[in-house]
Length: 294
Image 1 (cartoon, helix red, strand yellow):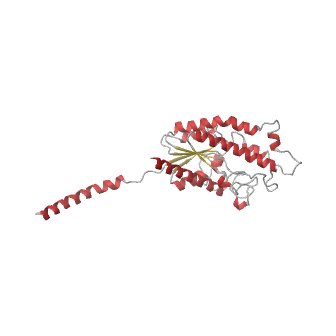
Image 2 (tube, helix red, strand yellow):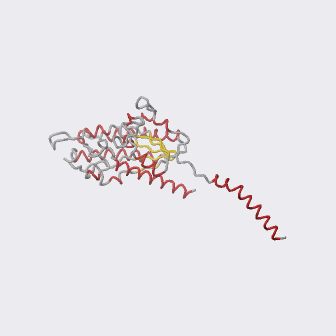
Image 3 (cartoon, one colour):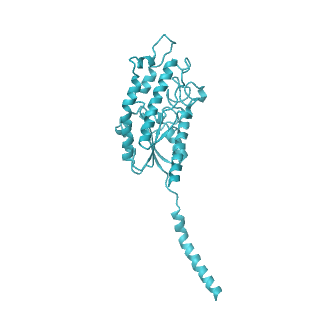
């Protein structure tokens, strides 16, 4: 009698498991990929690095830029709206006909945001071109001397005056994407102290002045990111030994006469990959901290 009862109970339990098993499987369905929006200028867009992104061709956006490197590594669903020559004004207004403001890509559903912006606001690229000297001293003019002629570094002053603008950028990102983790990607290591004249046509003091200016801009975005509890991503460290003075095959940033497909003074494919890997590591580290504190 007990044996018969056990058999009956086993039959009932087997039937119950058979009914509930599909539901258990369904509840274990994988979560959707994180929604990632990449904002920024040509440092993110990686102009002329193949393959070109056919969307918004005026933006000269590459499918190999750092946002794409990070998105692949993280398994994220990427919306890349970075655009070459973008300023902070182009985040809220159309930069080209038919190109939506970059902020429009953000929403409360956004999980991850990266942003690199500011170099065009302070006219950093045009200032770098003004530092070019094809002939050695004294047959030219030093941009470092010109920029500090009155005892004040006018580029440094311009960067400091721009700082509140970036503060407003991070406020707006938080307003539009309130649940997103925000990663501010800094500008990197372009040229070593003292330069490498004549391999790159920047006099020694001008090369040092140019990188010091880039470092000041990066310091501003880093400080502002920290004030907004965003994560700053350092790209200077990974670029040491890979600046425009490095051997052509070792460069992450192309020189004034690019040796591989990339815009002058911009990351090439190796540089975009290194920046994307730095961003990926920062995202994973932030997630590990968040899980550790939960």
